[in-house]
Length: 415
Image (cartoon, rainbow, N blue to C red; front, side, top):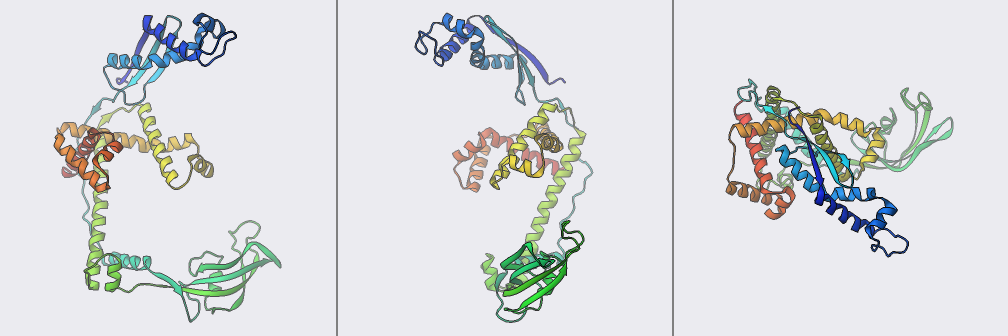
């Protein structure tokens, strides 16, 4: 591929000898040679005991930066992934490196305007509004003791229970003060139905049968449960009134009609945002398929490693280690890598697409505009601009993000 360059760099003469001397001074302090204090042995004595080869790797580290800079100058291109390094020759006189440098691949931007894509118009139905209102009420429902009456579907029954199979206590089939939501289908068929109608203090025997698709040693078997009802709890759904609206943060809301209009507005905004995201995705997909680019496997692999690192950080936030996740799911690093390759390839294509659009459209921002944007971002995050730039890296990264967002807008506006 045209974006791969192999550059050979040799460090020799005085530069290499200086590196070997520095390596010797470091190594000499770490070893003990009979008749000498640590660090006091002459170089020829050290080499006689440990060989010149023992100095090579530290000497390589010392000259590596110089060699790398020379390779970049010779290649006249910046690598997009960590260059591959091979030591072709190493001896007392010189070291020869071969750097394999992969730069950004050649990209031919295809058609990205007038792609013939249609954007759906956001609409909200009465059923959706009613459903969202019910969901909000359910979210704020209170679970309170039911003072009178019997267990009904939707109630939570607090029970003591014990199961018996073949007149023997069922292993794991016993519980005390167990809260069971009736209608949740947590227990085997017939259990929850059998509790419906019970009053607090009632004791009941339920004669049931394990389903045919249950665990092997119990499927199809008859089971007896002794159940005592300790308490009934019910969900009290809040009424649509001023007090409830204020609990939701709507201080000046008075009527049910206002609340429904607000719910409709929120749903419409949510749907509009979803449609915008979906439309952008369609534009990116179509425009990137019109673009010509050969992406090196090394570039894809680098992106996959970045994604795996992000995934690992997400797991950490949930208190899970990546190795534990692998063990539980039966996943391997190779499988995970393979699984993430399509998404990594798509991400790279989209990034190249936006960069090419930004260049083609001459998108740029002044330093004042970038500074202003950085300050706005810092204010949104509740941090100082310096803290934001420490996290981002530099104003150039902020500027890059601004360019990418503007390229996205151009993509949407012209399709």
